Amino acid sequence: MKTGLFFGSFNPIHIGHLAIANYMLEFSDLDEIWFVVSPQNPLKNKKSLLNEYDRLKMVELALVDNQKIKPVDIEFRLPKPSFTIDTLTYLSERNPKHEFILIAGTDNFQSFHKWKNYEEILNQYMLYIYPRPNYDLGEYENHKSIKQIDAPLMEISSSFIRNSIKEEKDIRYFLPAKVYEYIQKMHFYKK
Figure 1 (cartoon, rainbow, N blue to C red):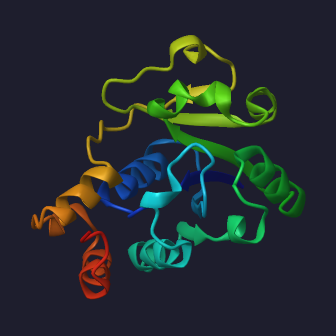
Figure 2: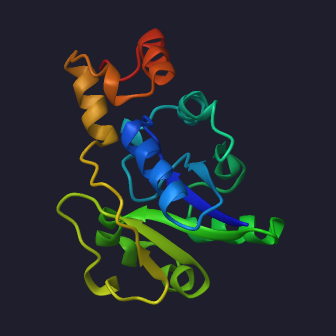
């Protein structure tokens, strides 16, 4: 089974994440997608991160009706900060019937050389890459382990969502309805 792993802080999950996952499922050879909620990305500022369980809850709310896309909290039980290669190795050892494929945006390739054992990721796994505004793959453009997926360009980001909420903008249509309701109820991202 080909399983796409969509890693992220999902701080918060938004319609851009869901549209990309939906596109990957329908227009590539993936059988399913796991949203891997990362408690702490070593390359991101921890101060702006909502509690990992709240972020997981929002991912669960967003995916509640989809059998082919599911939330995964595996990194909650692994050492922190979370390193992609460690999670890939752990999942591969415990799920031998799955062929894991990393889903990432072109924006990730600005810092890909900083990822722990990035060469090992390229040697052992396929990466399905979707476009992000103003980014390209650079030196990885023609790498044998990288497949560019011509997904729609999404200009929505979690930082845009957080900043908009802080500025008291009504952005309900940028988020799954249940996620928007949860954010409102919990007063997330107001400060």
